[in-house]
Image (cartoon, rainbow, N blue to C red; front, side):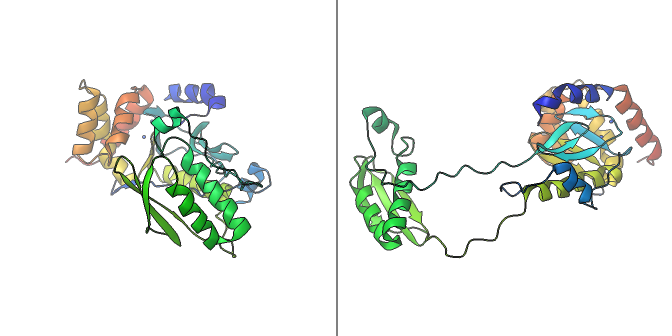
Length: 296
């Protein structure tokens, strides 16, 4: 994943052109929440777990391109960067439509909206907002009664029946015969526990990336992230390099990477096989790995 403002700098870094044990899929989940005030650089400097120094070991591949060391991991308002590449974007707060101050009224069906169907017409988001308006003004139980009547009177709905999940659910059948469902839960008096601030999660991820590279491991970014331990690098990276520099087609390279257990997912293998370009720096490092490893 590329950040536009650093595309040129990142491309130059990639041109200098570098990459178990066990092969591990690095799964990074980031909570969606509004960022807390404060400069990102200051937040990162306070985090003792994120070393503020470059790394001369490890291997980095971004969208199939080898990026040569030294590696520097940083965190800013855009996300986690390694040598300028934005490898993990900062989460953005979800867009939440506020409950309207007045009743939105009946949905205005047109021939075009009827042709789109109930799922693509915009009716369901409208109906959900109307339910929340009724709930705020009249309570949850009354809102459920009104919603059931409202849905039953829609031109595309044949009939309705109580059922489904949540505190209250409703099944409904379209005139074409398809059955669907919708459910609502009561608004809780006690708000849920706030998610972890996004910058804290990013700092933790950046620390993890730094640790992998400092330990001689490898990171493959592109439609996800694959992390490889040092022992996996020593065992498998020369084999990966042999396959992706062969004259085979991209599809055959990707298939072979997965079939031989060198990469865990076909999507990651496709990204590497498609974007890879040979470099003298990587070729020398692969040669060092081969000389350091005992023969099979």
